Amino acid sequence: MQAMKGEKITYHKTQYVNHFDVIIDTPGEYAETKELSAALAIYGCEADIIGLLMSAIEPFSLYPPNVVSVSNREVVGVVTKIDHWAADPEQAAEWLRLAGCKKIFFTSAYTGEGIADILEYLKQPVDILPWEVAKAEYDKLGFGPGESEKHTLRI
View 1: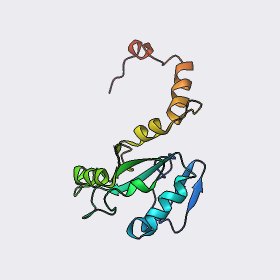
View 2: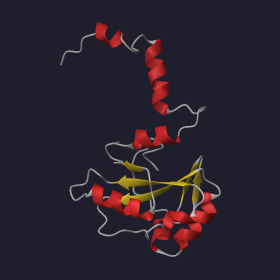
View 3: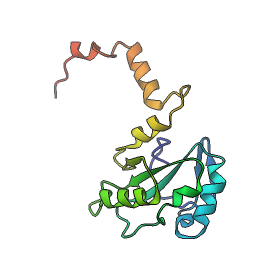
View 4: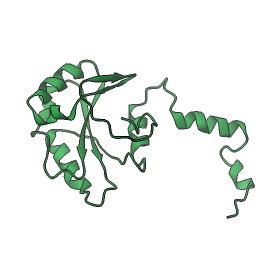
């Protein structure tokens, strides 16, 4: 969540359900108990899309097979920590597929890989994403598409 909000990554264990703007963050323990089905049903009513996270270094699946069937919302899978030396992103993705996720994102909160893909997927027509604001500012300065070819960077 911190990476999606463009914040510095710090360890923060979710103790209870948190609402941040358009993000609902639930404790990871929901995945390890029978409360996962209830959380998918309850918070699915408040969300347009639900994301199940699976660390690429997890030694086993946190989710039972076809658990997303209890939700009436789209459920996407998010494989995290893909940059870790012990990561097995494909195994994590397969577990998410078995849980019922059709769309899978591969992410690293530290390198930022895959975060823009999630934000782009979640974007509503009226949303303006942070990099679009930055690009618009650069375009105003004349560094938009095609303009960069006029300048040479020497290192």
